[in-house]
Length: 94
Image 1 (cartoon, rainbow, N blue to C red):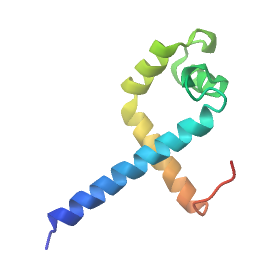
Image 2 (tube, rainbow, N blue to C red):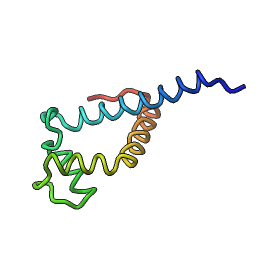
Image 3 (cartoon, rainbow, N blue to C red):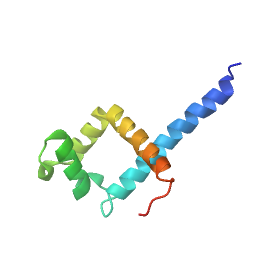
Image 4 (cartoon, rainbow, N blue to C red):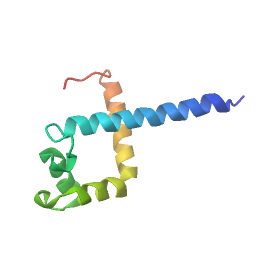
């Protein structure tokens, strides 16, 4: 039979796992700029590659507009990233 309580815990577990993957990715990608990730050269380059906006002009507004506007794509990316980590053994250096 279908158990609502275990389904709710499972959905919460998946959501929590995605959030942790997102935080882990941002933590690593914004090294040296953790309080201002939009200033990270790596994230600026990724933003430029994805959006076509020149990296030198990326600011807080641009960073959060893209993050919010592309949250579905970001979720898919984080899910893929988690799957790749599991395949790689769940541990990586860094």
